[in-house]
Length: 39
Image 1: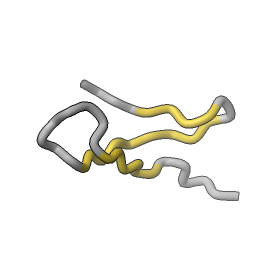
Image 2: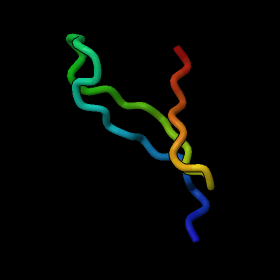
Image 3: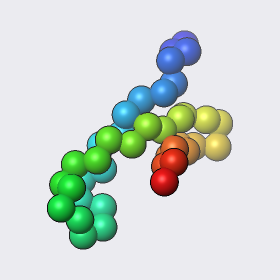
């Protein structure tokens, strides 16, 4: 069983921005994957 559920998800070109790669922390829960966007 993996207790370290926090990973970094790579989002490639999500909205048209100049930032091609964005690293977004997310949690894996029983309901699925929850993105932690603090913006």
